Image (tube, rainbow, N blue to C red; front, side, top):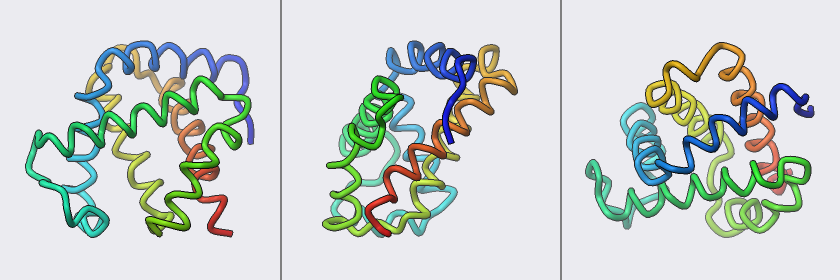
Amino acid sequence: MSLIKSERASIMSIWDKLAMRAEAIGTETLERLFVTYPQAKTYFPHFDLHQGSPQLRAHGTKIVAAVGDAVKNIDNMQGALTKLSELHAYILRVDPVNFKLLSHCLLVTLAAHFPADFTPEVHEAWDKFLSILSSVLTEKYR
């Protein structure tokens, strides 16, 4: 699966806005994940999971940075995210379904933050992009 030119443009247009609010969007995405899918909390036993905690803000920022790496390397996400994929598969042993859950929460957060820009076409492009990203991150599980 690959992205066409118009989908790439949609991803870039939202990325430029998302990057300026990385901490807020990353934090809200994680908070949404933990409220909607509380089983995801099992991977963060050492975190303060209260809304807006420093640990949630820091990890949310890391997640958005990883998405940014994927955006910047959209033609070679596999190469750009190899170390992250290995970390999650071999060391953290995160259930691969969590990437899909997190992607869904990020989509909802983007739609909430950018309602005028998050058209059905943009939603579709981001959904496809995050699906590719999730696939790359779960590649080492196979």
